[in-house]
Length: 87
Image 1 (cartoon, helix red, strand yellow):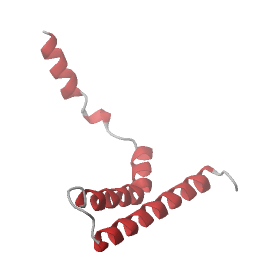
Image 2 (cartoon, helix red, strand yellow; image 1 turned 60 degrees about the vertical axis):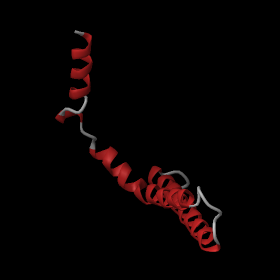
Image 3 (cartoon, helix red, strand yellow; image 1 turned 180 degrees about the vertical axis):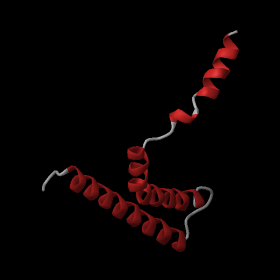
């Protein structure tokens, strides 16, 4: 009987009433540029895992790193402004 309960818990964990709230969706939307910039940086690093990075690879990594940093700064500034700190 335990496996049935375990399966039932896994199935009911995604019930309709267990959806993200509007606030959670807004937070994800706010963080999305940062998330996408980090994904781009990871992609640049993954592309060079099995070989020595060429000059083009190094430029791609630097550009992705700058975008990720800029997105992180923008997210922090937006969070500080939205929370009212420093206003």
